[in-house]
Length: 154
Image (tube, rainbow, N blue to C red; front, side, top):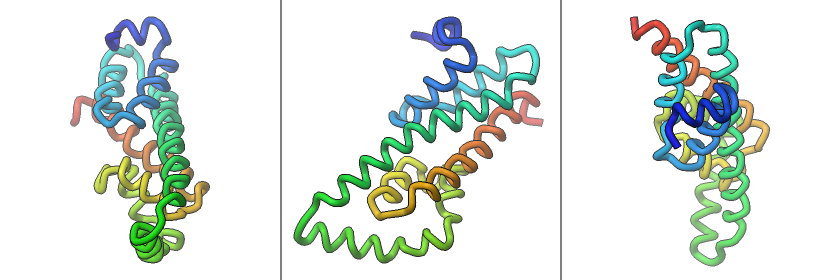
């Protein structure tokens, strides 16, 4: 299925939600390419704020699944793996009071948000903190992508 056919089937909003959800789970599906393409195909900037929000919602729904999966998987190991997880959990505890790394990852992508999502889930970051900061970071990232595409990078 191509971008044109997906857009025709689901519309700009449904297509954005689906592509961005899949892109949140499968790193090779590039959300930014979808957003640039949609931005270049619309004749007015009116739908773009909703596209940005839907892209962030789709991504965060996918990231939430990864987060919850990592949280469950972290409770499985035993022995030396469990000790490593506990050491990492102690080291990452400062995320609870200083979530800047989470925001930077969600907005800039360094370190990759996919990895940070798994670490946050596995190491006990509160879900509300993860979801709120991740959503704001994704809105910021996708807003910049769409704005640059609309203005031609100038």
